[in-house]
Amino acid sequence: MEVSMGENPVAQAIAQTLIEGFNKHYRIFRETSRRAKEFFESGEWRAQLESVRERVQFYDDRVDETVQRLHGEFAADSLDDTTWQQVKLHYIGMLIRHKQPELAETFFNSVCCKILHRTYFNNDYIFARPASSTEYIDSYPPVYSSYYPQDGGLRRTVKRLIEDFDWQRPFEDLDRDVDYIVRTALAHLGSWPDMEVNCQIQVLYSAFYRNKTAYIIGKAVNGYQEYPFTMAVRHNAGAMLYVDAILFDPWRISVLFSLSRAYFMVDMEVPSGYVQFLRSIMPNKPRSELYTMLGLGKQGKTMFFRDLVSHLRHSNDQFIIAPGIRGLVMLVFTLPSYPYVFKIIKDVFGASKNMDRATVKRKYLMVKHVDRVGRMADTLEFSYAALPLSRFHPELLEELRALAPSSFEIEGDSVIIKHLYIERRMTPLNLHLERAADEDVEHAVREYGNAIRELAIANIFPGDMLWKNFGVTRYGRVVFYDYDEIEYMTDVNFRKIPPPPYEDAELEGEPWYSAGPMDVFPEEFATFLLGAPRVRKAFLKHHRDLLGPKFWQDAQQSIRSGYVEDFFPYPLELRFCNLYRSDDPPTAALSG
Image 1 (spheres, rainbow, N blue to C red):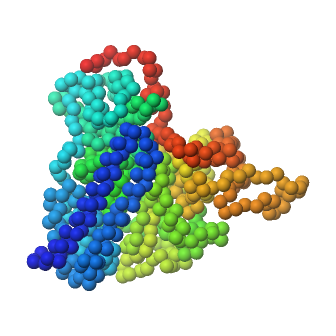
Image 2: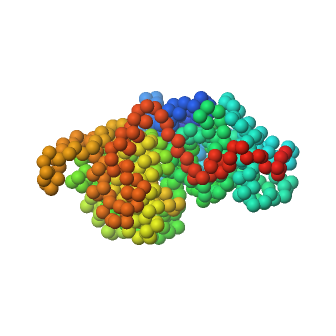
């Protein structure tokens, strides 16, 4: 449908209101991201974590503000179709020289979807597909800086690129760290290649901040070869800076951007430029995930759903009930050809679940606000998602009608799911343990216990610790993904089971001790976790202390004292402190 922009001052004013709403959002987003550098320099770790939590809500707040303006100033509900189509055309014109056009389009969609009926969710009224190019957008400061080793030598170049981040805190011994970087690079390459005429090191202009670490992300270019890298910069005990590690393997760098971790704080004028650079070093990482990990979750959702729609056009398998033990709260289904699971809250929960729909939604939102420390899968939340009816297996449709009839409706040739969570698909831990060899069982059980420990230290108690609520990633890492019973550690009362009042009390069907709603007895964990002998053996070998209250109470005390634990998204053996001795003489090669 072609619509002339014409002379419609109302449409132009609405478009102006929309762009002002987005610009305000991104201005606040950047200001928050810039403060991450200050928090890193001053070691204000709690403030850093709080800033990440607060940022999650910024987008929805600005959308709601803009919706209220449109209702109050333009009676948005009563506007005709032609006006809305002209609003979109005026808005596109405002994005021609915009630095974040793709984000602004998504903001437009978010606002309009709160005003228009979903029958309008097509390309005439909203941005069902992008209308603005994100290629070659000028940025100041630039997206990345280039350094040329042939001008001053490799060591001086590496030292300079680190110094250019201008952290207002001295390094403990930057020359030593540069030497460690050069040694590790040489060990990774095996031998130094000849420098080609285009030899350069490209580094993203802004550091990536998360937890207690700043990451320098870049790549070396030499001839036709590219070598990605990430340096981790941290504080020592004396609050001086040091380079803790450098990663060269693309898959290890990709793990830094896992959706099971907290989002980065990055100051970006042109986020599409950062995503394009990151894709050059992690080509298998979807752009939707990169936007999400940069704190731009709504853009991540938009791109994910466009990818899903495209995948549905180019595949023909059906959505089916996900394999594994059926949950008491969630109905879970999957598309075998697509690496995600889709979760819908059931209308009626299992008898043992004392909660309601609002509580479940609050728990899943809670995951967005905490540090997931690489142990909790991130979720994408959608409302009124339309999926093709023909792709639903009859058995799944029957399950939906039986267990979640209020959560979906069939409209024409689409299934409209009113509320939906989507997560990366993993192998359920219980299925993995059933099929695994003995050594793999020990690794998985050790990972499971480590996940529980790290979540506890990050102030998260899983609640339901059954094996089926955890998954195994493609890198063998165990991740928690069922959130309807999670609690903050500091809200739970960990107790020791009192001694029985008389000799035969333990033989009775009911416990002899009372328990409040937030009381947890870790000694009970063994009853429902350790039935299989080889699982029990591995758990007691590595995690016996989780079966008593002391570990949990000590973790609570640490959290309440304000201490922020160290979490490393790379193996500890790759840290320079474990690779090299500080009194080792510097390497002679490439001393320039």
